[in-house]
Every structure is written in structure tokens, then in C-alpha cells.
Length: 293
Image 1 (cartoon, rainbow, N blue to C red):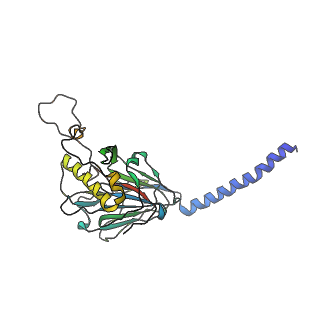
Image 2 (image 1 turned 90 degrees about the vertical axis):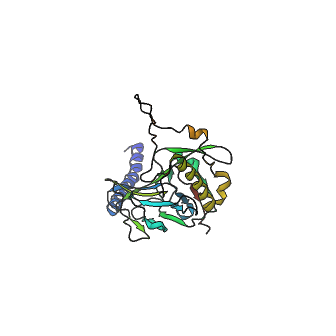
Image 3 (image 1 turned 60 degrees about the vertical axis):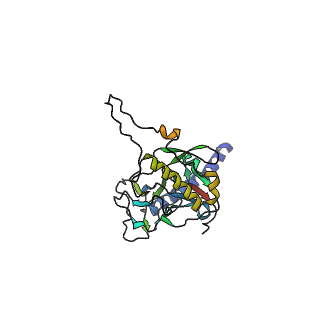
């Protein structure tokens, strides 16, 4: 046998052995965890603060503080329920990590969230309407439009999402949602479909708000979340309050019929969330420290 051919054979032997070993290991792992792969989606609609806890393996904590007395109060809805849940008392949820086999590395974050992804080491949860403990996701993204806002400190325009969507790849096992209130049905949303399990958590005001009221309330509550939970972010990231006289208010986009209409006011159509009517969401914050109280 020629020397060159011999070297090829010798080089191929360990490579082939390694591939065989990988295939055997892969087949064994596949049998252990099952062959089915599916997706779990966690939808956070409305005024949720979302914290990426690098100190806890990149797990997430989502929460919505209770509004102060005298301000518009909030209600919580689970999976599109027609009636609010919890009766105003604080609820805690936890998504079981069983079957969520992924490295505890930072999730992929949609670039559309970058305007509201902040960093701090000083934060707290406080008295919240809802708190949700979540394992590290594969992806953090959003759906639908983003609303235009302005930072008070420097007048910079930014685009705020009205929701967060967390995505997990599930291998074999089924996702399990646990709740502090045993009377709640923590089963997946009815609009889950084969291969995708969905849970919807929604926060919205108790009373119905018109367009201007919704914007005013949304911005004030965002600033309140910063003040109560992320004090180091207040000065730089508080939002300029919405006023009906603003140019932005006079030029709100709306749908107009493309055919002739009699001289009557046309209906203004705007985006709404799954159940609640929220114009703004909450901050997305990365941290290396546990909550400070």
C-alpha cells in the first residue's frame, strides 16, 4: 500500500469511530428524552417588568407592581379569561423547567426590544399583582406594533413594545405551570395548537380608557415601575408624559375607508392586546444581583 493511501486510511479510522460513537450517543439521548420536539410560548401582555437574572443562570422574573392608590387600578387575566383572576391579591406562577433542556446561556433577544433593555444592579419586586418565575428561554421577542415614546432626560424618541413573548424548545416532556392559587386552572391557553403550547398573562386597567387616557396612564405607570423597582434607571429612562395637545397626539395613525363616505365621523381603529387594552408595556432589565428587598 502506498504511504499516502495508508495515511488516509489511518486518518479515517478514528474519525469514523468518533462518528459512530456520536451516532450511538445521539440515538441513546433521543430515546431517553423522546423524539417529539415542541415549543412553549409565554405571552406577557401589558405592564410587566421583565428581569433577566444572570446571577441565576439567565432565568427570568416577570412581575407587575400594583398601581398606587388614587391611580388607575389593574386587573389580571389568564389565558384570555373573560373575568379577572385573583381578586386583586398577589398571584405567583412558576413554569417548570422539566423538558426544557438547554444550556443556561443568555437568550436570543429580538433587536426590536433594544430601546427598552436596560442594565442595573439595584432593583426590587415589591407589592405586585402578578409574579412569574421562568427558566431561561431560548428567545425573547414580541408581536405586533411598537408605540412611539420620548425619554424625558434627552428628548430621544424610542419604540416600546406592548408585550413580550418568551419561547422555549421542549424535548419530550410537557410544560407545567404552577400557581400559588389552587383554584386557578393553570392549563395551556385554548388557542394552543399541535407543537405549540401557549400561556397568556395579561394586565390591564379596571375601567375602559379612551385613546388619550390609555397613553397617559401607560406612560405614568411605566415611570412608576422605574421609581418603585429600578430607582437607578429613573433619571435616564423616565418617559415624557403624553399630552393631548402634542403634535404626536394630533397625528395618530388610523384606518380610513378607501371609498366615498357621507360626512360623518369615521371610526378610529387601533391595536389592542389579547383581552386587555394596553398601549405600553414595561422595562426589560438585565442584572447580576438578586433583588434588594
